[in-house]
Image (cartoon, rainbow, N blue to C red; front, side, top):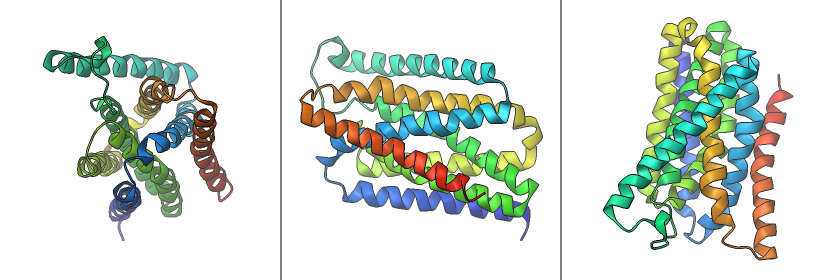
Length: 258
């Protein structure tokens, strides 16, 4: 088996497995579950960005300033992108941001943010998988399995966010499929021009982390404050903790298999 074939099989298998497991949950979940499970998605986003993506970016680049600048630039970029989405909706109808009607969803803003961010993240995942296979076949397999393990809870969280943003389940599945294609694109680009892209990887990871943090802190957490009673707050805290814990546990188990 050629190295390129192994890279393509690993990235395709990882994307398909993640999507299938996430879709299984999304298509079986009741609509009433979504607001509750958004708390879990918040925890998974915070955990993935702060415990995995940012440390990996610093480790790969060895330059905290570069990663910090990418993170800051990413937050400002997603702020501007969200403003553009709001501007479009405010011209079409009474804008909720201007005290208009209140919807259960957010006109797709969170879904748009997370889709853009996941495209960056999945592209970088593909580059990383390709680089590992180019170094050593066994390292490539281990790296691909590690990324798959991280992708599964991330994809589940993404589905919940897309549903929360007002997308239908079919639309959510299609969007996640399109972002998954970025992994294959990243793997191909990485295989053919890894040396040229290597210096950009930490910055791309910084942008991916920025999207996760922006969605969690700007779009999702404010919605939790609508339920201020102690019982709901405790439930939210537990679910956020479970989301963070899932990412931390996966990272711990993978770290001890190396």
